Amino acid sequence: MRFSESQLALPLAALFVTFFVAPLSVLVALSLVTEQGGNTFTAVHYIKFFTDSFNYSILFETLLLGLKATGVCLLFGYPIAWIAARAKARWQSVLIFLVILPILTSVVVRTFSWIVILGRQGILNQIVLGLGLSHEPVQLLFTEVGVVIVLAQVQMPLMVLPILTVLTRVDTNLADASRALGAGEWRTLWRVTLPLSLPGIVAGCILTYSACVTAFVTQTLIGGARLIYMPLQIYQQAIGANNWPFAAAISVIFMIAVLALISLFGMFGRRV
Amino acid sequence: MHRGHQLRLEGITHRFGEFVAVQGIDLDIAGGEIIALLGPSGCGKSTILRIVSGFISQTQGRVMFDGEEVDHLPPNRRAVGIVFQNYALFPHMTVRQNVAFGLEAQKWQRDRIAPRVDEMLSLVHMREFAERMPRELSGGQQQRVALARCLAVDPKVLLLDEPFGALDKNLRLDMQIEVKRLQREYGITTILVTHDQEEALSMADRIAVMSRGCIEQVSSPTEIYDQPATLFVNQFVGTTNIIPGELIESDATACRVRLVTGETLEATSRPGLHAGAKVVVSIRPEHMRLQDEFVPNCMRGSVKAVLPLGPYVLYEIELGAGATIKVSAPRRAAGDSLRALGQMVHAAPAKVAACLVFPSQ
Image (cartoon, rainbow over all chains, first blue to last red; front, side, top):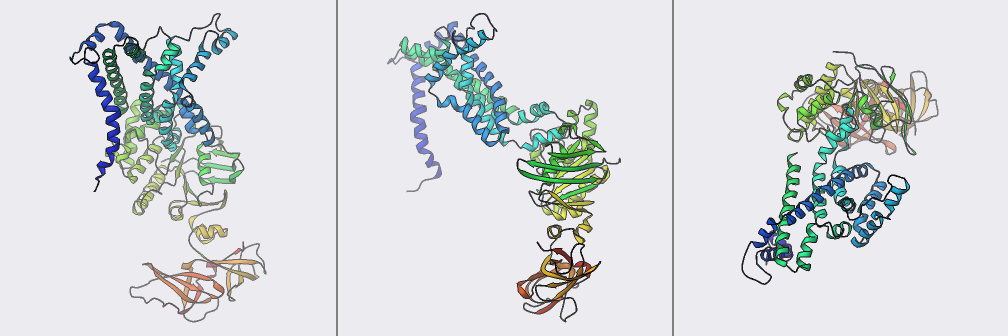
């Protein structure tokens, strides 16, 4: 028996269909029935979602949270990647190790350490009070600022690694050429290095963004009960209210919204 | 046309940790002169280039433009133009934007930039390619753009870092002629860094041959070739035959050497070498004649290989004592008969001046 080359992709295709296409189809199908196990197709859950401003304010807040966390990640991640790209091999591996450290830690441990740091009697507040920067503890835990800080730290590797990869591939002569032509460090960064590392920035933003908006544990434990984001909302509808079709519907809406935003990033990356 | 700027390197030494990259480099380059730094890779020539352009600051010594020290100036304030081996055109900018980059960086008035870019592109015959991206250009075209970009900002010194290495042979010759034309037209002081001796010989007014971080000799191309100061220069530039021997007598101009083959040869004397010294004799293949009969001052051997290379024939001659030499003989007319393998011949230097002696290493 002879295999054509395309047949070699069959195992992968099977895996993809079983574990991605099939569940997704079930999810979409589930979102279109009135109740679990029912067989009447309806759009009632979608209508319910869009007629309740509480629901789409959660969606909006979640998408915005992703943007904020991605922005902070980029703001700190780019310089880290830039420094790592120029560092000597030994320092580069130390930096990379520090950056990927969060991935190597259990999500629960990592999140509770942040609670220790951000809490009212936490390390951060003790420093703030000790230095006299504020007379009373700053509320960070259970606020959006806290969530953004923690997300930015936790997802940092997803931002730094793609940018670092692109930066190390950019010809160092280009920056030298720019300098020799009379451009200072900033102009060189702005006109040469940054545009050339754009593919890495776009990839990093897409990865970070999709990880941030779906980070259930971080959002829930740092954000607390008052800050509700889409993953928690889906969880509550499915497990708490036992309303699986509605949970499925908002999952589909959430997925489409995130995909739309991500393709916007991608388009931006291609145009420049 | 304007007179170029004078460049002076004074006692430049640079160390990377323990490693001494360049040591005690003194070099005076006149305005408008083109000088080649020639040497094998790792000899420190690129380090000098980076010191002159300000990308590394030397451990010791001074760099001076027109008698003024520039060591405190960062690369973007030195007015040094560099053409890199891979041209380093900005891949995300058009040809026009590439050439305009330096002008913008140096805060030229907006309305003066476009005419200047056109002028520079015309100079290198690339005007019709102004809106192309670098990846759409051939190697030679990219190099023209790199030159235009570099010259647009009117640098004091032009540094060419192995600029022709990536071009194929015919194009390389065209570009060498082109670059030399531009260099003359602009009268710009130029340093050409290369490991290619032909490039150095054809392009440069003077050549500085480097080895292991030091300059071995700075001279005109013909002098480097005909009167090499050291054995290294002699062997690195052109090809030569090295035959060990012992100096038997020496006066102010000439000396006699007893070769390991037993024969004696007359050579140009070298100060500091006295009778009894172990030496090597160096004769270039094209400075020898093959003869059938014995003449005074020659080496006897048999033909071991015959390589007809078009305009000349290269013979490998086996002498006594295991020494072999190469002799190249011009072919004066078509149909000249070649010497046969195994034939006994006598190789004689064309002139005493063609025989050089160096201390044995």
